[in-house]
Length: 141
Image (tube, rainbow, N blue to C red; front, top):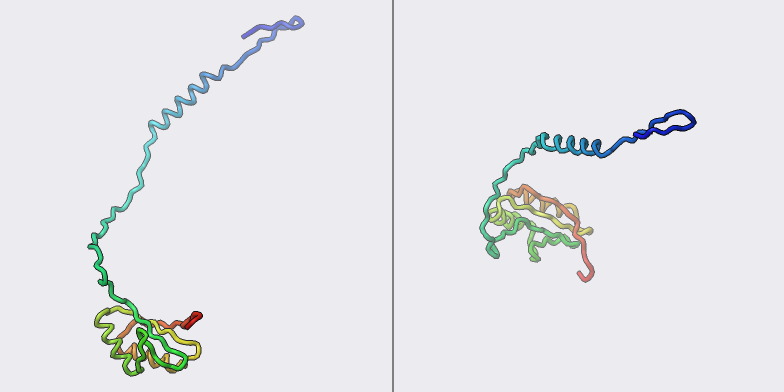
């Protein structure tokens, strides 16, 4: 503190020292960091299954695509089948893959009657999952 005399009056100039204030703030910060307890989030432990390496050719085909052409011919694996033999093919397929699915890919010019006949044969064979899709032809086919 300094005393300054101006025109007969005394005035006291005061300065605030910031160093102890900053020290006190750091002490409080350290105190709160040390005394705060951090909670850990509870987690779930997972047991990952162990798997054996896959053998080549061990993967079974899980779905069959039945194609119906513009002339209402039925193709399975690029071979022509009669509608009446689709059921036998599907029964054999379900023996190999019990929960197998069938995708019926139709041409835009094929009749809906032929699609329904193929769906009926699949259902009679016991196929649970049957879906119908439009066959998209690429250039060159």
